[in-house]
Amino acid sequence: MVTTNEPVIIIHGLWVPGLIMGLLARRIAQDGFAARTYAYPTMRLSLGENAERFARYCASLAAPRVHIVAHSMGGLVALKMLEMNRPLRCGRLVLIGTPYSGSFAAQRLARFPGGSALLGRSIAEWLSSPRPVPDGDVEVGIIAGTRGYGLGRLIAPDLPQPHDGVVALAETAVPGVTRRIELKVGHTEMLVSREVARQCCAFLRNGRFA
Image (cartoon, rainbow, N blue to C red; front, top):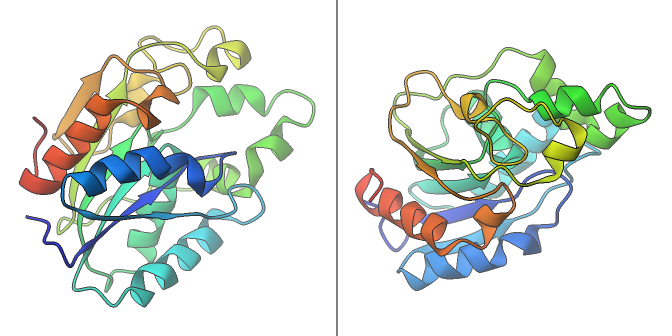
């Protein structure tokens, strides 16, 4: 159970500012959680650098535990942070549309002129490095989308089905994590979906989806 003195940190994905997570954060806060957003430079810094920054932010909250709701690349930052900072106490982590096992769309974009620069350093590091496996002490839940509308279809029309328009369903799988739910939402739509917010709150409260 997430208590009222334990912050729930909402972290965004690639190419967007932290403000984009505001609606999801408000809905989670309305359900009684101490939700706050966290912003980071998605392209300029490496994944390790972003993970260290995120760890310092979490430590600065001086809370007994933190909980994280992460969209897309934000989930990669969170997972890398937990791998690098084992002493940090994280109770529950919700990954929303996070491409854990790889990104067909990102690899396709990298083939275009200037595509690698558009992806930034964090995604490049994730794709070229071994994937961190979540610590057994962290309860992880996965929300994956199956409405295939999004930028990824323009970059990669042959994106493996089913997908959320950017991330293939198979790419969201994390070894050992069985608590997952598939919703008919697109990748960006996840940020404004009431059902996604409801399922985030259910997992934070009960350790399982509704």
